[in-house]
Image 1 (spheres, one colour):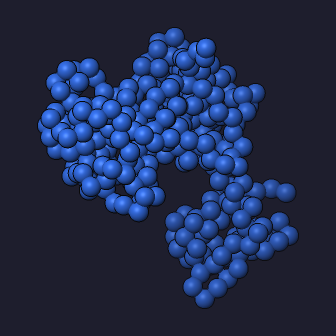
Image 2 (cartoon, rainbow, N blue to C red; image 1 turned 90 degrees about the vertical axis):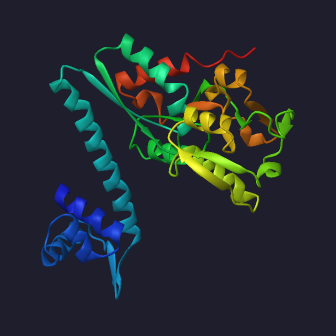
Length: 299
Protein backbone atom coordinates (compact mmCIF):
# COMPACT_ATOMS: atom_id res chain seq x y z
CA UNK A 1 0.00 0.00 0.00
CA UNK A 2 1.42 3.40 -1.01
CA UNK A 3 0.75 6.65 0.83
CA UNK A 4 1.02 10.07 -0.78
CA UNK A 5 2.49 12.72 1.54
CA UNK A 6 0.08 15.28 0.09
CA UNK A 7 -2.83 13.04 1.11
CA UNK A 8 -1.41 12.56 4.61
CA UNK A 9 -0.83 16.29 5.03
CA UNK A 10 -4.39 16.95 3.84
CA UNK A 11 -5.79 14.38 6.28
CA UNK A 12 -3.89 15.87 9.24
CA UNK A 13 -5.15 19.36 8.32
CA UNK A 14 -8.77 18.14 8.10
CA UNK A 15 -8.46 16.31 11.42
CA UNK A 16 -6.99 19.34 13.19
CA UNK A 17 -9.72 21.77 12.09
CA UNK A 18 -12.57 19.24 12.05
CA UNK A 19 -13.72 20.47 8.67
CA UNK A 20 -12.94 19.20 5.16
CA UNK A 21 -13.21 22.56 3.39
CA UNK A 22 -11.03 24.45 5.89
CA UNK A 23 -8.56 21.58 5.96
CA UNK A 24 -8.32 21.73 2.17
CA UNK A 25 -7.68 25.47 2.35
CA UNK A 26 -4.79 24.86 4.75
CA UNK A 27 -2.98 22.76 2.15
CA UNK A 28 -4.11 24.90 -0.80
CA UNK A 29 -6.49 22.38 -2.38
CA UNK A 30 -10.03 22.80 -3.67
CA UNK A 31 -12.68 21.17 -1.49
CA UNK A 32 -13.75 18.87 -4.34
CA UNK A 33 -10.18 17.71 -4.89
CA UNK A 34 -9.72 17.17 -1.17
CA UNK A 35 -12.90 15.12 -0.93
CA UNK A 36 -11.76 12.98 -3.86
CA UNK A 37 -8.35 12.40 -2.30
CA UNK A 38 -9.89 11.36 1.03
CA UNK A 39 -12.17 8.88 -0.74
CA UNK A 40 -9.20 7.37 -2.59
CA UNK A 41 -7.29 7.16 0.69
CA UNK A 42 -10.22 5.37 2.35
CA UNK A 43 -10.49 2.99 -0.61
CA UNK A 44 -6.77 2.20 -0.41
CA UNK A 45 -6.96 1.53 3.33
CA UNK A 46 -10.28 -0.28 3.14
CA UNK A 47 -11.88 1.63 6.00
CA UNK A 48 -13.72 4.88 6.60
CA UNK A 49 -11.56 7.61 8.09
CA UNK A 50 -14.09 10.40 8.59
CA UNK A 51 -17.70 10.64 9.66
CA UNK A 52 -19.36 13.53 7.80
CA UNK A 53 -21.63 15.59 10.05
CA UNK A 54 -23.66 18.77 9.63
CA UNK A 55 -21.01 21.00 11.17
CA UNK A 56 -17.90 19.23 9.95
CA UNK A 57 -16.24 15.85 10.32
CA UNK A 58 -15.00 13.62 13.12
CA UNK A 59 -12.49 10.81 13.00
CA UNK A 60 -13.32 7.13 13.07
CA UNK A 61 -11.07 4.76 15.01
CA UNK A 62 -9.19 4.11 11.77
CA UNK A 63 -8.89 7.86 11.30
CA UNK A 64 -7.48 8.29 14.80
CA UNK A 65 -4.87 5.62 14.07
CA UNK A 66 -3.95 7.23 10.74
CA UNK A 67 -3.66 10.67 12.36
CA UNK A 68 -1.31 9.34 15.03
CA UNK A 69 0.95 7.66 12.48
CA UNK A 70 0.81 10.58 10.04
CA UNK A 71 2.01 12.95 12.73
CA UNK A 72 4.89 10.59 13.47
CA UNK A 73 5.74 10.47 9.76
CA UNK A 74 5.92 14.26 9.54
CA UNK A 75 7.88 14.49 12.79
CA UNK A 76 10.40 12.03 11.35
CA UNK A 77 10.58 14.02 8.11
CA UNK A 78 11.26 17.21 10.08
CA UNK A 79 13.97 15.39 12.03
CA UNK A 80 15.44 14.10 8.78
CA UNK A 81 15.49 17.64 7.40
CA UNK A 82 17.10 18.94 10.58
CA UNK A 83 19.71 16.18 10.45
CA UNK A 84 20.56 16.77 6.77
CA UNK A 85 20.52 20.59 6.68
CA UNK A 86 23.66 21.00 8.82
CA UNK A 87 25.70 19.07 6.24
CA UNK A 88 25.34 22.04 3.90
CA UNK A 89 26.94 24.23 6.57
CA UNK A 90 29.81 21.83 7.22
CA UNK A 91 28.15 20.49 10.37
CA UNK A 92 27.83 16.72 10.37
CA UNK A 93 25.13 16.16 12.95
CA UNK A 94 22.08 17.77 14.53
CA UNK A 95 20.05 17.05 17.67
CA UNK A 96 16.64 18.47 18.59
CA UNK A 97 16.24 18.95 22.34
CA UNK A 98 13.06 19.96 24.18
CA UNK A 99 13.28 21.05 27.80
CA UNK A 100 11.17 22.67 30.50
CA UNK A 101 11.72 26.26 31.63
CA UNK A 102 13.74 25.22 34.67
CA UNK A 103 16.36 23.34 32.68
CA UNK A 104 16.38 25.82 29.78
CA UNK A 105 17.18 28.81 32.00
CA UNK A 106 19.48 27.24 34.59
CA UNK A 107 21.66 24.21 33.85
CA UNK A 108 21.35 23.58 30.11
CA UNK A 109 23.19 26.67 28.82
CA UNK A 110 26.43 25.55 30.50
CA UNK A 111 25.83 21.87 29.76
CA UNK A 112 25.18 22.44 26.06
CA UNK A 113 28.06 24.89 25.70
CA UNK A 114 30.44 22.26 27.11
CA UNK A 115 29.01 19.57 24.83
CA UNK A 116 29.27 21.76 21.72
CA UNK A 117 32.88 22.63 22.52
CA UNK A 118 33.66 18.91 22.64
CA UNK A 119 31.61 18.17 19.49
CA UNK A 120 32.23 20.96 16.96
CA UNK A 121 30.60 18.87 14.23
CA UNK A 122 27.19 18.94 15.98
CA UNK A 123 24.44 21.57 16.10
CA UNK A 124 21.53 21.62 18.56
CA UNK A 125 18.02 23.06 18.42
CA UNK A 126 16.70 23.82 21.93
CA UNK A 127 12.96 24.44 22.39
CA UNK A 128 11.16 25.25 25.65
CA UNK A 129 7.99 23.30 26.53
CA UNK A 130 6.23 22.06 29.66
CA UNK A 131 7.43 18.74 31.05
CA UNK A 132 4.24 16.86 30.01
CA UNK A 133 4.58 18.24 26.46
CA UNK A 134 8.20 17.12 26.32
CA UNK A 135 7.43 13.62 27.60
CA UNK A 136 4.58 13.10 25.15
CA UNK A 137 6.64 14.41 22.22
CA UNK A 138 9.45 12.00 23.06
CA UNK A 139 6.97 9.13 23.48
CA UNK A 140 5.47 9.90 20.05
CA UNK A 141 8.88 10.02 18.43
CA UNK A 142 8.62 13.72 17.55
CA UNK A 143 11.88 14.58 19.34
CA UNK A 144 14.79 12.38 20.40
CA UNK A 145 15.84 13.97 23.69
CA UNK A 146 14.03 15.94 26.38
CA UNK A 147 14.80 17.32 29.83
CA UNK A 148 11.88 17.29 32.27
CA UNK A 149 10.94 17.56 35.93
CA UNK A 150 7.74 15.49 35.81
CA UNK A 151 6.82 12.07 34.49
CA UNK A 152 3.59 11.35 32.61
CA UNK A 153 1.82 8.18 33.68
CA UNK A 154 1.56 5.63 30.90
CA UNK A 155 4.11 7.35 28.62
CA UNK A 156 6.54 4.81 27.15
CA UNK A 157 9.80 6.66 27.87
CA UNK A 158 12.99 6.23 29.87
CA UNK A 159 14.00 8.87 32.44
CA UNK A 160 17.68 9.28 33.33
CA UNK A 161 19.03 11.52 36.14
CA UNK A 162 20.49 14.90 35.12
CA UNK A 163 20.49 17.57 37.87
CA UNK A 164 18.98 17.99 41.35
CA UNK A 165 17.25 21.23 42.33
CA UNK A 166 14.32 22.66 44.28
CA UNK A 167 11.85 25.48 43.81
CA UNK A 168 12.12 28.18 46.47
CA UNK A 169 10.19 31.30 47.39
CA UNK A 170 12.10 34.57 47.09
CA UNK A 171 11.00 37.70 48.93
CA UNK A 172 12.14 41.35 48.96
CA UNK A 173 14.50 42.60 51.68
CA UNK A 174 12.57 43.30 54.88
CA UNK A 175 9.49 41.32 53.83
CA UNK A 176 7.52 39.58 56.59
CA UNK A 177 8.67 36.21 55.22
CA UNK A 178 12.35 37.09 55.32
CA UNK A 179 12.84 35.45 58.73
CA UNK A 180 10.92 32.29 57.89
CA UNK A 181 12.85 29.13 57.05
CA UNK A 182 9.93 27.29 55.42
CA UNK A 183 6.45 28.23 54.26
CA UNK A 184 3.50 26.42 52.72
CA UNK A 185 2.56 27.62 49.26
CA UNK A 186 -1.04 28.16 50.35
CA UNK A 187 0.07 30.66 53.01
CA UNK A 188 1.48 33.11 50.44
CA UNK A 189 -1.24 32.98 47.78
CA UNK A 190 -2.64 36.37 48.82
CA UNK A 191 0.68 38.06 48.04
CA UNK A 192 1.47 39.68 44.67
CA UNK A 193 3.86 37.64 42.49
CA UNK A 194 6.51 38.27 39.86
CA UNK A 195 6.28 35.52 37.22
CA UNK A 196 7.92 34.35 34.06
CA UNK A 197 5.91 35.08 30.94
CA UNK A 198 2.62 33.26 30.26
CA UNK A 199 3.27 30.16 28.21
CA UNK A 200 6.53 29.35 29.98
CA UNK A 201 6.56 25.93 31.59
CA UNK A 202 7.11 27.23 35.12
CA UNK A 203 4.31 29.81 34.71
CA UNK A 204 1.91 27.01 33.78
CA UNK A 205 3.15 24.84 36.66
CA UNK A 206 2.78 27.61 39.25
CA UNK A 207 -0.69 28.67 38.12
CA UNK A 208 -1.82 25.02 38.18
CA UNK A 209 -0.41 24.60 41.70
CA UNK A 210 -2.47 27.59 42.86
CA UNK A 211 -5.58 26.36 41.03
CA UNK A 212 -5.24 22.96 42.75
CA UNK A 213 -5.67 24.87 46.04
CA UNK A 214 -8.71 26.72 44.71
CA UNK A 215 -6.78 29.98 44.46
CA UNK A 216 -5.64 32.37 41.75
CA UNK A 217 -2.31 34.18 41.88
CA UNK A 218 -2.13 37.95 41.67
CA UNK A 219 0.55 38.43 39.03
CA UNK A 220 1.90 41.99 39.10
CA UNK A 221 4.37 41.59 36.25
CA UNK A 222 5.62 38.90 33.87
CA UNK A 223 9.24 38.88 32.72
CA UNK A 224 11.44 36.81 30.40
CA UNK A 225 14.09 35.30 32.68
CA UNK A 226 14.73 34.08 36.22
CA UNK A 227 17.29 36.87 36.67
CA UNK A 228 14.58 39.41 35.82
CA UNK A 229 12.29 37.75 38.37
CA UNK A 230 15.01 38.13 41.01
CA UNK A 231 15.58 41.78 40.09
CA UNK A 232 11.88 42.60 40.35
CA UNK A 233 11.56 40.79 43.67
CA UNK A 234 14.64 42.59 45.04
CA UNK A 235 13.01 45.87 44.02
CA UNK A 236 9.95 45.03 46.13
CA UNK A 237 7.47 44.29 43.32
CA UNK A 238 6.31 41.00 44.81
CA UNK A 239 7.28 37.43 45.65
CA UNK A 240 8.81 34.97 43.21
CA UNK A 241 8.94 31.20 42.76
CA UNK A 242 12.20 30.12 41.14
CA UNK A 243 14.69 27.24 41.15
CA UNK A 244 17.29 27.55 43.91
CA UNK A 245 20.02 27.34 41.27
CA UNK A 246 18.67 30.53 39.62
CA UNK A 247 19.32 32.70 42.71
CA UNK A 248 22.78 34.26 42.57
CA UNK A 249 24.78 35.11 45.67
CA UNK A 250 24.66 38.78 44.66
CA UNK A 251 20.88 38.93 45.21
CA UNK A 252 21.23 37.24 48.60
CA UNK A 253 24.01 39.64 49.60
CA UNK A 254 21.61 42.48 48.69
CA UNK A 255 19.13 41.19 51.27
CA UNK A 256 16.71 39.17 49.15
CA UNK A 257 15.25 36.32 51.22
CA UNK A 258 15.24 32.70 50.02
CA UNK A 259 12.59 30.61 51.78
CA UNK A 260 12.11 26.86 51.42
CA UNK A 261 8.69 25.64 50.31
CA UNK A 262 7.03 23.05 52.51
CA UNK A 263 5.65 21.19 49.48
CA UNK A 264 6.53 17.78 48.03
CA UNK A 265 6.43 19.23 44.51
CA UNK A 266 9.14 21.77 45.38
CA UNK A 267 11.77 19.08 44.74
CA UNK A 268 12.39 19.48 41.01
CA UNK A 269 15.01 16.95 40.04
CA UNK A 270 15.63 17.23 36.32
CA UNK A 271 15.78 14.11 34.17
CA UNK A 272 16.77 13.32 30.61
CA UNK A 273 13.84 11.80 28.72
CA UNK A 274 14.30 9.38 25.79
CA UNK A 275 12.26 6.60 24.18
CA UNK A 276 14.91 3.89 23.95
CA UNK A 277 18.64 4.37 24.18
CA UNK A 278 19.35 1.94 21.34
CA UNK A 279 17.09 3.98 19.01
CA UNK A 280 19.03 7.24 19.47
CA UNK A 281 21.14 8.68 16.69
CA UNK A 282 24.87 8.66 17.52
CA UNK A 283 24.98 12.40 18.23
CA UNK A 284 21.80 12.26 20.37
CA UNK A 285 23.31 9.36 22.32
CA UNK A 286 26.48 11.39 22.88
CA UNK A 287 24.40 14.32 24.16
CA UNK A 288 22.47 12.06 26.53
CA UNK A 289 25.71 10.59 27.88
CA UNK A 290 27.09 14.09 28.41
CA UNK A 291 24.00 15.28 30.31
CA UNK A 292 23.70 12.14 32.43
CA UNK A 293 27.38 12.39 33.39
CA UNK A 294 26.47 15.59 35.29
CA UNK A 295 24.01 13.82 37.59
CA UNK A 296 24.87 14.09 41.30
CA UNK A 297 26.47 10.97 42.67
CA UNK A 298 24.36 9.06 45.15
CA UNK A 299 25.94 8.11 48.43
